[in-house]
Length: 123
Image 1 (tube, rainbow, N blue to C red):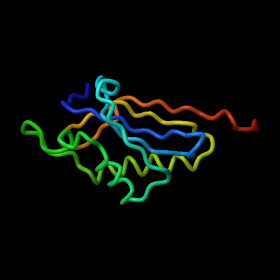
Image 2: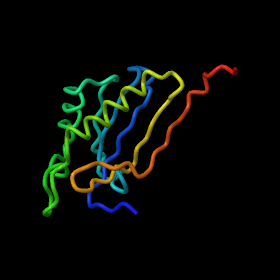
Image 3: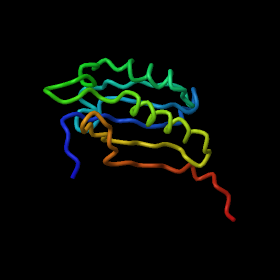
Image 4: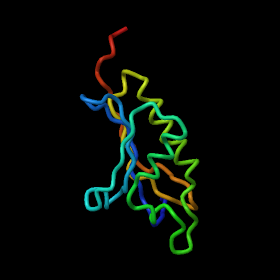
């Protein structure tokens, strides 16, 4: 079992108005209570991913906390860019990674949900 004191949520959604978006926020049991979520249009470049990370209001959660190392922002940006890349696949409607548990500064996806669009034609 993966254990850590900080949890994030990340995902990709297809917004009817804006198109595919990548999201990042406070995750786990605090997702609805804290409501700190930021979005960027997909696909994401590295700078976009870092801007998305920096948009979170709870920056203290990402820093070194109670003797634990700060979140590896480059590794987290890789996850966000990967989610943005999934937006290029028309068969993927949404992806939800919740929680991403922070262990030794790295985000580990403990649970994931991928929803298909249902647009795939039969072979």
